[in-house]
Image (cartoon, rainbow, N blue to C red; front, side):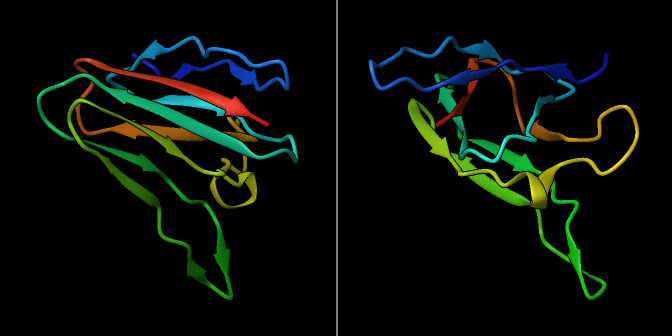
Length: 116
């Protein structure tokens, strides 16, 4: 199974309620080429914490930026970001311009990508 593509949801001055999507066992990805701030909302309804990893593809002077790793405690929500495409987007191939998301577990985990 391949990574699933998440639809980026735009925040609105009038307000909005994001549509949450179940975490995918092989991870997610989203288009992240817009210059506006982008965030990942994670809802953990599991009885254990989940680790979210956003791999980095950025290097400077031959030194790689470490991946962003965030622990979301059980029975909580966490807003992660902003997620900068320059640091996290895939650089080439069919997924160029997309940011990857990996999960340590997927049961009872839902997510949404939000853009300001």
